[in-house]
Structure formats: C-alpha cells, structure tokens
Length: 103
Image (cartoon, rainbow, N blue to C red; front, top):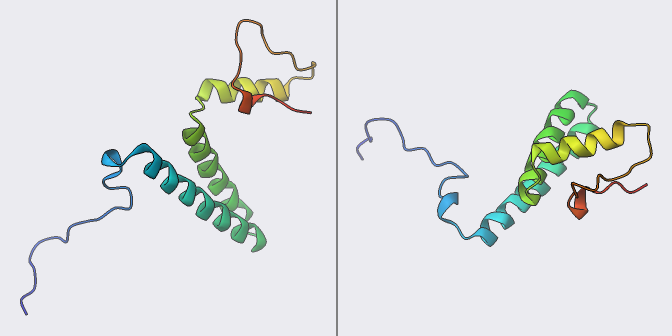
C-alpha cells in the first residue's frame, strides 16, 4: 500500500454549512449549543470557573446568532439592567420580545 504524499485534506465540522438548508443549519447550531452547555456544566462542577466563563461567552455569542440579536440590542438590554431607574422602554425604539426585561 502506497502512502499518500502531501498534506492531508482537512475536514472541518462547519465545512459545507453555507450550502445547507436553514433548518438543518439551525438544528446543528442547537445541537452545538447543547454540547457547549454540557461542557460548561462539567467545567463548573470541576471548579474550573475561568474556563467555564470563557465558554459562557461562546454560548452567548451562539445564542445571539440563533436569535439574530445584534450587539446594539444586547448593549441596550445591559444598559437597562445596569441602570437604577425603573425600566421604561423608549417609545422610539422597541426591543424584540425575547430581550424585554422581566422582573
């Protein structure tokens, strides 16, 4: 049997995603999200908090992509949570229902 010469071809988990139907891509992202959350729980149980925090950022980014949340929408939500004033949504700008603050 002959050895193949040259570098082996790389196959990435995400390769070909552009050609996939949207529903299939979303299913794969949801499966990835579930896996990342399991990993985060495992790291938290093992007292590896710094790594778990880094993984939580990846989870947040993936959730934002799934729900099509922009950075400015996230910043607006964080500003509302951080303010000491009662939460009042500006009349000029309505946030999507999944970003509304519930107390």
